[in-house]
Amino acid sequence: MKLMLVGYGNVGKAFRSLIHERKINVEIGGIVTSKGAMFKDSEKFEVEKKIMAIDALEEIKPDIVVDMSVANYKDGEPSYSLYISALRQGIHVITTNKSPLALRFKEIMETAKMHNAKIGFQATVMSGTPSINLYKILPCMKIIKIRGILNGTTNYILTRMSEGSSYNEALKEAQEKGYAEANPELDINGFDSAAKLAILTNVYFQKNISINEVKFEGIKNINRNTIDDAKKTNSKIKLIAYADSKENYVSPIAIDQKDELFNVDYVNNALQIESDIEKITIIGPGAGPINAAYGALSDLILLIKGVL
Image 1 (cartoon, rainbow, N blue to C red):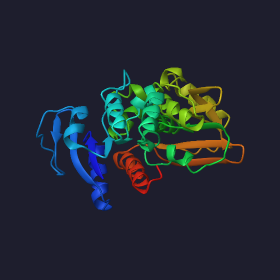
Image 2 (tube, rainbow, N blue to C red; image 1 turned 90 degrees about the vertical axis):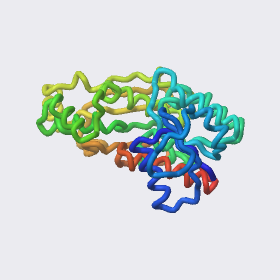
Image 3 (cartoon, rainbow, N blue to C red; image 1 turned 30 degrees about the vertical axis):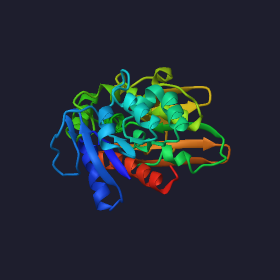
Image 4 (cartoon, rainbow, N blue to C red; image 1 turned 180 degrees about the vertical axis):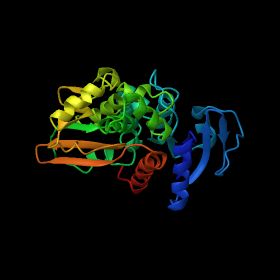
């Protein structure tokens, strides 16, 4: 199968390395970035032509588009149009970019189904820690609710604040360690968690909501007093994402020691699924280039095996 990679930052490079290290039997037919495209698999990216990804489809003729480009929450472009064009041609899509799915999940899924194409998006939520793909191995369960910690940056900040750091100190430290962006606004205001929750809600409850229908609040108003008040009751503040069949929200909440999410600290993420049969909690890293790349690789393997 021939791949077209879109985006070649840290995640794209890690994905390409995993393909070669694991000897996955695929061909990288081209790599496209905002600067242009190359049409051979090479460690050194050298632009051969200025071309948009959607136009590169015709030249590369891939079987699978792997999108690792930067999220655009204004309208999901240019990835949204790329997905629709690819899927209409029966080209499968694997993505780490959550913005198109958080904004226009229904249109993308319906297009894929109509043209017998697959879309893999495990890496959009919790990177390589199973969240989206976990649902596929839970047949005949009636999902009652899901809740989790879906953003590593805010979880790291809250963990360090519980250990005595100020908000600003914890944020600066997260940025220095590479957990937070230079502009961490999408993380700390709850937007990133809300985008992930929208995707999870659509998967686990078969809904078609966008991020615009998720109520969310971030951690900007959490201060020393908030942390200390929680400690008095042996609790911790966590940015919790919650959804059931009727409501969804992202909000900082004090949880006690009996809660399975209590000890999910630093940059770890967690997803808890409660069904009519059992409750499942899965914990693991939710960020990092190699983790996101593995999420995409897992989709690729499942697609090759015909079980995506």
